[in-house]
Image (cartoon, rainbow over all chains, first blue to last red; front, side, top):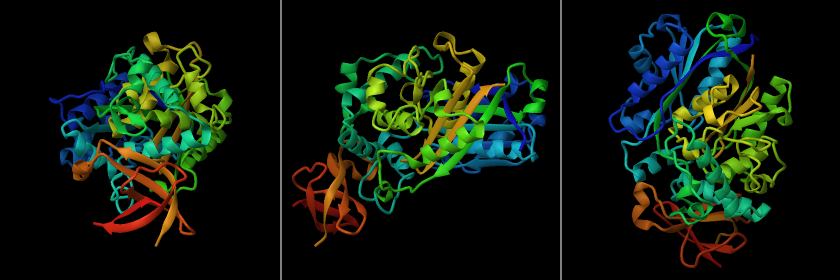
Length: 386
Length: 68
C-alpha cells in the first residue's frame, strides 16, 4: 500500500445561503482546493463526492458528474457516496483506498449539502431517513430524539449532567466565534445553553448542531509525489471506516458507538500510535452528548468520564486535549454531506499552522471522527505533518 | 399482553412533518420480556427509565404502551 498525502484543501463558508445552489457551493470548494494545490481540472483522475440527501433536499440526482463537469472535470470516474452524516468521511476513506492501491494518483474528494431551502419540519423528516424507517422513525423518532434517548441513558448510567452537555456547546461556540468560515459566530453562556427551547428532552436547541449549507474539498495524491504540488503536504497516517446496526433499539448499549471505537482502534494501529499520542481532534458533535461519547470511544478519557472532562475545560483551545477548534458542528455548522471532509480541512489548517487565533501550540498530529446516523457508520482519520 | 421495562425515553417537541400535530409526545425504547427492544410511543402518564410498561395497541402501525 502506498502512503497517501493531502496536497490541497478548499472550503466554502458554512451557513444559510438562499441565493446559492448545491452545485455552486461544491464547485467553489473544489476550485479553491485545486487552486491551493496548483492543479488543473485536467490533472484530476477521479472525483469522490459525499452527499447525504441532495435528491430530497434539492431534487438533483447524478450529483458527482453534475458537479465535476461544472469544474471542467470529465472523462474520469465521478461517484457519489451516501452514508448519512458520514457521507464525505466515507468518500475520503474510499478515495484514499484507491490512491493507496495505485489505481489513481490525483483524486479530488468533496462533500456538499444544501439544506436551508426546506422548512425545519421537512429537514427533520429528510434527516430521519437515516434511521430505521420501519421502526424507530415510524414511531416518531427524529435525530434529536434518538440522541436525546442516548443522552438520557448516558445520564442514567454515568451521572452525566445537562451542565456537562451545555459545557460542550459553550466551548464550541467560543471556538466557532473565532472561525471566519463558521455558520454561527457568537459566544453563548452556560445559562443560555441550559435555558434553550426544548427540542427533544433533555436536549435544548443549544445541544443541537445547525442546519447549514456548505461544501468542502481535499485533494490527495501519493506521498512520493506530494512535493510536486505543495511544500506543506499532510500525511494520511491512518483511516478506517466501520459499521453497526442502523436502529438504536438493536444495539446492546447505546451509551457507546461501537463503530467509532472499532474504527479508532484500526486507525491507531495503521498509524502505529495510541490515543494518548493524538494532540487535537475534530469530533462529530451533531449533538453535545455525541462529543462526550466520542472522546470516550476514541480513548481520550475513560468510559463515563467524558462529561466531567468537558465541564472541567480540558477540551478548550488551551486544555490538554483541544476538541473541535473549528467550533464543531454546533457552531461551525453541519451541512451533513460536507461535514466529514470539512473536518479533514479543519485538521489541515491546524497542521499547516493556518488556524489564525485558534492555532494550537502542539499541531503535528490530529484526528477526525465522522459519524453517520446514530452510529451505523463511523470514519476515523489520523493526519500528521509529512 | 406484551410488557417491558423502559430502557430510555424522550419527549419530542420538534416533530417531523408528519407528526407535527402530535407534539409534544413521549417516545421510549422498551426492553421486552425475552424479546429484545422496541421503539414505542407512550400514552398517558409520562415514564422514566426503569418503569414497567404494558402494550395497549397498534395505531397506524405504531406500538403504543402505557405505564403499568
